[in-house]
Length: 126
Image 1 (cartoon, rainbow, N blue to C red):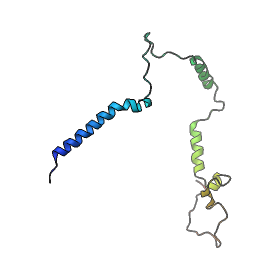
Image 2 (image 1 turned 180 degrees about the horizontal axis):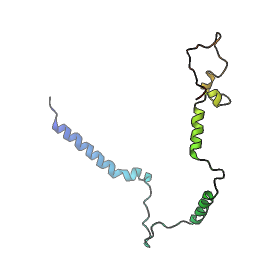
Image 3 (image 1 turned 90 degrees about the horizontal axis):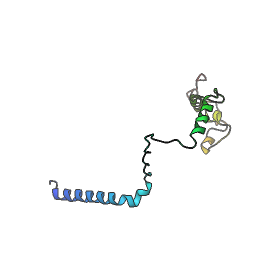
């Protein structure tokens, strides 16, 4: 009728023992997945030291920034282009069938007596 406290204590004890065993064995089983420890900072107090490529990276950055926008596009231009193409039908978006799902509706219309006036109406202004 009521809870058996002894059984709950045994279950809890087994869970804690299993957790401690797993923690003790984790390093030998899965330690290779850990990131290597960071090296201690240099004693000069400068923090991170520069790498050999630092001067070339700085000059490359200046060249990109000083190019005046030759060939540079704003990322939002790409986003607008993708969103605009998403509104198009697959026939308008692609030049040919790319997937088997494109087979449906890609060919000629199956309607012999015209299209119903109750169907989807696309606004050409969108």
